[in-house]
Amino acid sequence: MIGLDGAEHAANRRPVLSEFTVKRVRAMRPRIQTIVDEHIDAMLAAGSPADLVTSLSLPVPSLVICELLGVPYADHEFFQSCTAELLSFSTTGGGRADAMNRMLAYMDRLCAAKEADPGDDLLGRVITKQRTAGDGTDDHEHLVGLAVILLVAGHETTANVISLGTAALLNDPALAAPLRSGTGSTPALVEELVRYFSITGAVTSRAATEDTTIGGTPIRAGEGVVALVPAANHDPDAFDSPDRIDPERGSRHHLGFGYGVHQCLGQNLARLELEIVFDTLFRRIPTLRLDAPLDTLPFKDDAAIYGLNELPVAW
Amino acid sequence: VCVGAGQCVLTAPEVFDQDEDDGRVVLLDDRPEGERAESARRAVGLCPSHALSVVP
Image 1 (cartoon, each protein chain N blue to C red):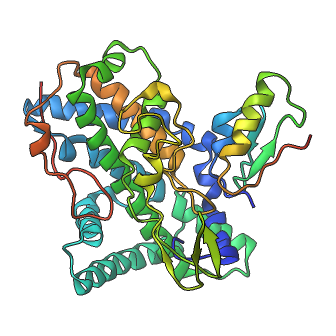
Image 2: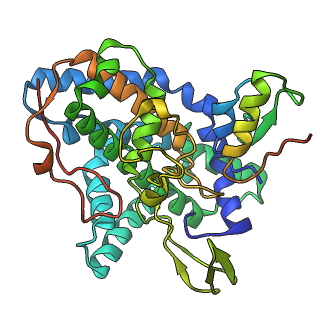
């Protein structure tokens, strides 16, 4: 879906639009709340200190997208490690192709099983919809591609914003105070964290399909354009003192979810997951603190999607 | 043109909704006034696929 343009892209995106509407996503709130609470219960039961990435950041969005798609969560170690390999700059070209092939083979089997018996999950519903709307045959190849992109995009991105956002909140008591006291707008905070961290970096790179001019610079057909999301989101013309996290600024016009017809399909699911995680984490563990200095944390400087490999916390 | 990002519903829920079956924009109020008109204008500005416009 990411690499397609025009009608072909629209045809791929259309069957899943209804799955990610604001209303449909809001209906998932109780289940997401339960998932978050269960993971915090387990973290508290295991005791301080903990690694927030493995206890909360990664499992919550992984479980949410697994349940939505109909992917067995038991396979999470497999798809999480494939995703990490796909996104790491230290993975060789061959390694990346290998990780992608393993992921495609996994989804090929899973989608074949769903085609044999489409259930009431996103992939099952897409199959049923295709059969009713089209000529009755399954578009297996597209379904596999769709499943891979939704699974990868559905867990890794949100996980990284949970980790980076929590680190920022724990590093600045004034920023976390409204969460701890249950005052302030968490949706506005979420919006600002998505802007500030701009984790997708250069994922929005494009190639020009015809000669054009952007900002006075002529670009010829076929030339590449790196539309750097962090640069746009830290543009002082668009955001006052952009290097400050300020939930009050009103940052809805940020480009953290991209822009244009490729803008993030799951953005409202991400917003809701982030809101519930931050609200619940700081309400339930008000004494949460970083268990290592911020500048020693293992940031993902070598990955296409920015984040944290570990986040040691204590309480 | 609508790509179902849901920005309009998030910004102006009294003016815009999304179709249950295809996820695309549905207009709830085609002549919003006052505050509604302002949030509708903001939603038009945030729409990532330029599917929305204000007719004077």
